[in-house]
Length: 171
Image (cartoon, rainbow, N blue to C red; front, side, top):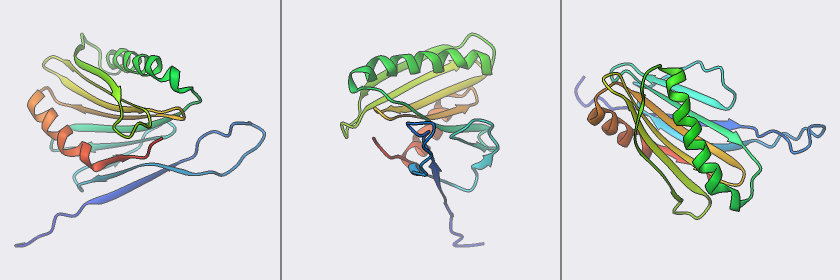
């Protein structure tokens, strides 16, 4: 149909952090991020708490966004961020066995000053590329992980087209 409009789905995920006191159950709901994705991204069932997952069949790409609620001091964030990246990289071979290679990793202050921005790129040569963007604040760890086929350029292009549609709420 000529003049057909491309529609976007708007996902707003509300996640409830665990109460500070297990006896007191307060229903404080936080909207931790907004993610606008084209219709090609299909929502997938995911067993993890505080996790949403999507699949883009044409690109054979998966996107997993999750939140871990924490209690940390600002002085702990740098060490915590390095540990998060190390654990995420170590988890890749468990999900897809093989010799994963880290292409890049970085921790830097977020431009808002509300925490740290974490990132890495890794690949299982000839099979898969993993691109990660995360945020560490004194109250949460927010994870955005994209898994794509072996074409680095296509993976980076898809990641770069998708990341601007991800709006984390910090701190």
